[in-house]
Structures are given as structure tokens and as C-alpha cells.
Image 1: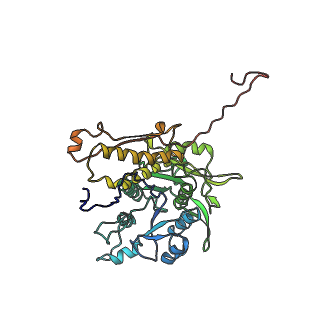
Image 2 (image 1 turned 90 degrees about the vertical axis):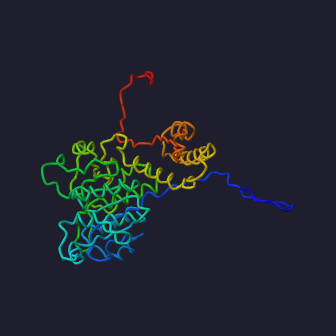
Image 3 (image 1 turned 120 degrees about the vertical axis):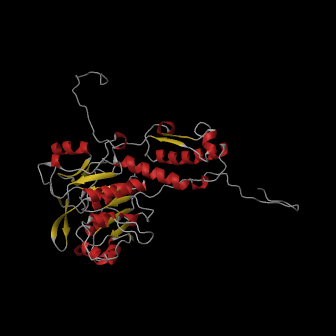
Length: 391
């Protein structure tokens, strides 16, 4: 309501009529969950470099997989990681009133919700808002992988990086087990060979290294770029050297391969999710939508309780349109023009009287994401001398 003016004079008022720009949320903050013999238990600790990790959790001697995963993350370009130590089976027995060990380590990872400040396992990560990627390095138990996928699906804006078993127990690569269907996770094979200062060369699960590749690709190109055809820093070998014929079997199943190429090094050679839905086949498409959806949710909080009329609808359309236009200019959306790349619809059609009476405002958004050139085909043929090139 306008201020009452009681005496003559000049009055200056600030009026908010401009756009409310939507900021892009981060995409590469990783949560590592694993077992460590030292350090705080069931307390997510933010680490922004390797030294901070060793300050809390020691070095490679104190954990089987966790330390190497975090080191690989930072070495490959990662910058922010929350580390959650679930402790060990012995620690869990000491904390139990009957002194009994859990039936399996899966219980440590799944955790329990005993209220704020007392959550354990994956439940403790629900208290951290800015996580984008979740890794449980070396955990190939289907129960644990299912729990990590469920966590990402329930939190909506998180993506899981899962590890294959170190050894193929039965048959060839066609017998490699695969996690359950989900558009919120990716699966990598095989394990990478790295140097351990205490044990020499060892094989480690790839998830931590892949998380670093994700962060590096996001920073250099953007989340819309598939995190593939990237060198895996720190990898000096692979548990299995995969041929093209073997990848022909794995790629359609959504199993991303890490391969060694002559003169090109060890590279990530796959960019698929483990979803059977073709719309969500690629890692970059899922993670792009995660970023866009979360950015819109956080950037439009001002809309709540505003008068639900045409003026509000126009402001929402303008703000979201400006955000998507910025994405299109950055190359994240496919189309020669903005109209081909996206649309935003918020009007009388999406908000009829019954919707308004229910206290709702509905805005419909469509995007055309860019997808990776997974199969590059050059068609080469002979042409007659002096012939027309266009024939």
C-alpha cells in the first residue's frame, strides 16, 4: 500500500519491476560415504582438498577404498566433497547396547533416522543441501547400491556413481551384473590401477575418479557436456582391458567402460545412465535437468503467496525464459533459435479458475537438451573424375 504523504515535498520510492535472475546451482559437490578406521562417524565433513581429508580421516592406511576415492576426486579436478564415515563393523558393535555386530555392512550405509543430529548412514546426508553426486566407493552389494539410488531418487537433485565388482566371477563381460534400473545413476567398469605409497600398485573402484571427471567437465564445458572421452588422471592401468567387441555388449546395457587407447591414455568411454528409458539415456541430460529444476525451485521462492494473476504469470514467464535463454546461449539446449530450444507457458490455459481456487500456479516448461555424439559416422565414397560433388 502506498505511503501516506502529509506534507508537500519530493518523495523517492524504490519499485521492484526488474527481472529476478535465476542463478545456476552447483553441479559437482560430491558426497562420499564409506568405512574408515579414524575420524568422526556419521558426521558429513566438507573437504575442499586432500590435506583437509587427511586431517580428519588420515591417509591411505586407514580405509580400504575411501581415501583413494577422495584422492582420485581431487586429482581429477574435483573441488568440494562431503565425506561421511559410517565407521566399521567393530565400531557399530561397540555402539550397540548388546555389543552385537550388524548383520552386514549394508546396515552401516543404509543407516537410520533417529532425528536431527542423530541420523546415520545415507540418512545423515539428507541434512546436507548442496550435494549433487553421491558415491559409495567399492560397495558393489546390490542392497547398498539400491539404497544409494533410492537416496538420489528421493532427494530428486542427486546423481549416483556406482562401481562394478573388481573381479568378474563367472564367464565374460556379458555376465557382468548391473544395478537396478534408474535414471539417477551411472555404472562404471572396470576398476583402475593406481599407485599406493604403502602397497605399491593396487586396483581401486572407479567412482571417485569418475566424480572428479564429472567436476572437471562441468567446470571446463558445463553440465550439459557428457563427462566422457576424458583422461582419468592417476590411472596407470586397468583391471580388464576391454575390446570394442566387448563394449558392444556392455554399452547398450548402460555399463560405461573405461578403456586404454594407444597414445591417448586411459579414458572414460561411456556416458549412459542405467535407465531403460531412452529419454534419460545420457548422464549429461539427467544432470542438466537436475540443475535446471533445482535452480528454478530455489530461484522462484519469491512467487509463493504472491497474487495469482496475469501479472505474476508474466513475471514468472519472463524470469524463467531469461534463465533458459542463457542456457541456450551457452550451448546447453539444442535448436537454431530460442523458440526451437525451449518454451515457457504460464497463462490462463495452464491456470484455469479451479487451479487458482486450489491455491496453485502451474507453469509449463519444455526443453530440448543437447545429447552427445555417441556414434560418429563418416560416410566416405569414391567420386568420378570431374564429377559433380553434389551427386
